[in-house]
Length: 368
Ligand code: SF4
Image (cartoon, rainbow, N blue to C red; front, side, top):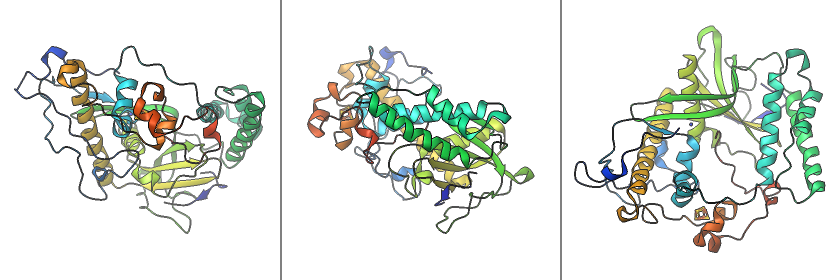
């Protein structure tokens, strides 16, 4: 655990149904029952807060769906929740609508993630602070910046950020995985995603539960007194909130998947915010992880039903009825804003580099 960091607390193509069958078997066509959570608002289906709310309280009928697992990632599920139209353009439309230009803050984030992953892949003697900075410079992605000067300024900032973070790491603390793809199956879905870093630490290691604002449950001392920890790097301007680690569906799913892959419990999840040096950590209970998984299954069922209707064609309602826009301030950051009149009216366009300074830029979920 990086000693210098301040501890505040503490998911392939689906097996698709034959479109011609959609709405036939069993009589009634599939109808989408949609979770009311939008734009990052609370979804009580997450478990903690209580009753789930629906815009349309119609029991989902997956008529015509063949048996099989619905493959998905946390990003796909989140996309559906945030804006069904964006989900359709990103995951269903063929050809996919053109996206806007690359975002500089995405370039910065990818550069930092790549440098940190590369640092852990170096032979132990070469894991130095300077090596981290050099990796960042060599792999710098300059897309989306206003000009070379702006790119250079943020390269310098990112280098300082990466070097400061690495200075607090123990190069001997070999992670159990770096940029590791994990997956898990339930009876209904096949979830997959990529973890920035998976630590295997002594349980209760410094930083895991310390700090005056510590929240969450102390992880149980697993075999050998060690615990697996899902670590996600954050590079945006806004530090994560105390609840972000606890409520993240993606982190919970990654913890479950990591535990399944390594055949050991994995309950702790952490957000490492490099610009501020803050770490937000949370240790889930087994029940809490199970609630997150049920929520993922519920959202995936909505996606599966919507996918069916899309393939059944417009007469089945597979356009704006099933995939309505969800206009709001975040539309300024949407890759598909150019194809969405409602989004254009909801928020002004953003320059590709605006996210470098805007603490309100959507952070997104971990993983692909
Ligand atoms: S611009 Fe807004 S409403 Fe339109 S697809 Fe994007 S997020 Fe959805």
